Length: 416
Image (cartoon, rainbow, N blue to C red; front, side, top):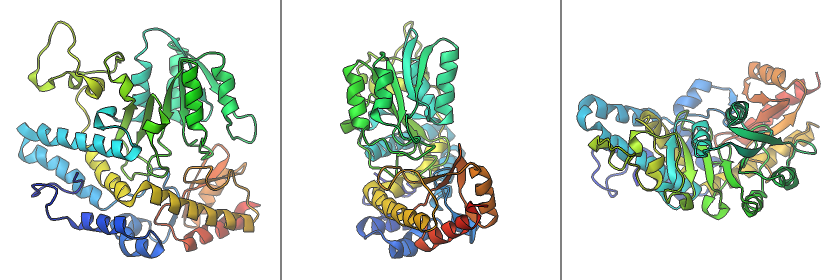
């Protein structure tokens, strides 16, 4: 599969672009600060120039954009400019490349299991709208705002009965916190693999899914804060559904999101109200049969005219992540977290969890976390805060020197 600009390329043996050459180099070399300095930083030169001497530790939010992304988006537009009547041929091919890329990233059986969406919330609604009568849903009290809001709206409208499980101790969820709610009976469990508030990684998630299935409960896993930084295998996980997107660690910005469907739900027995002409077996034939004609497999979950530019916007970040390898990214992230933990300990700054039990950021509880984040920004440290937690999220571009500087500046204002 080729993710770099296709123009002038005839097959996969075509001359590699400069971007592809760098990705090839990255994939074959040991990942360390020297390699990152020599090859990786150059792929983000515009973002690095924009932030100047500031230390960027909020990559778990929008993330730093690759230089290649602009060229990819321009390519997507170019088909509209020069060949508007046939642009959909190129665009549909790009959408399917995006679907295959996500499938590879999360180890889904194939691209047919991946349904492009413009938000993870849209993916959740597609599943909720498969049910013809009100259902009982269990979620955590720490789901991201969109997911939490959608569930509350559905509950308010009487579409679902909602129970939000809360952690019994120190903001850390145990499997028992969910089991207590599931034991009452549930049709659907909605839960994040990595909590966006605390960064907790639910290491017991496969066991939780198995337990839910034993009670007849289907599972939606929110992978937004795990995809690209935690190795994923949705096939081994055996989840029914998963939602995610490229806004954060995949450097793909907003709009390039997706819904994963377990192949066992692609037999036509599951249908959603969230549908449109692209879900027809031959959408460009423009037939309008008396009874709806729905495509087989994952295409039956497509909707109306899809957003095109987000998949081009996500292309470079997805290619970068696949070439680098999530296992290697995770190893490097854990190395950074260990270093960050030690610097925090040295400065008597408390933090949640321990290395290996969280996603890719470290959360530090403080009653004035938001004010601390604003103070740090004036000192050239860009981070963020959520619900009484200050969050540092280093990415591959952050050096140990930057992490040390960030902690030093935090220590200076921590107790004030």
